[in-house]
Length: 156
Image (tube, rainbow, N blue to C red):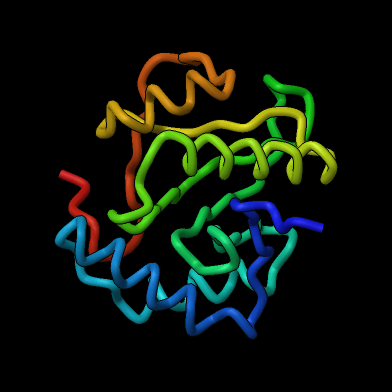
């Protein structure tokens, strides 16, 4: 039987090294520093199924990216939802076919897990916006805002 060219592997601690290498590449590409707290958050999604899921994207069996999904309950959606927080493909595998196949596999997985809606933010990436629309995503709820909390935040 021929192996599918694109697969998602649910990440657990045994894939931690591969995931960390992919995540480090994503952070470098965005010119961000990957902190110890970021690494810990990646590990949390590998072991805490209630918080979300971490998938490594495999192309012909080789890791070429990852998708980080967070779970939440929505009154508006009347059920359990998911938010695609991170979707990364290494540059040499960044094309529409791989992105679409990866999202399709993710949607199948999340549907079987009882998720009623999947949200994704793509304001800074036209390419991702187009890919989301090709996979049936529609613009929803206008703008998204974020505010960090903590003692080191400036409230003025």
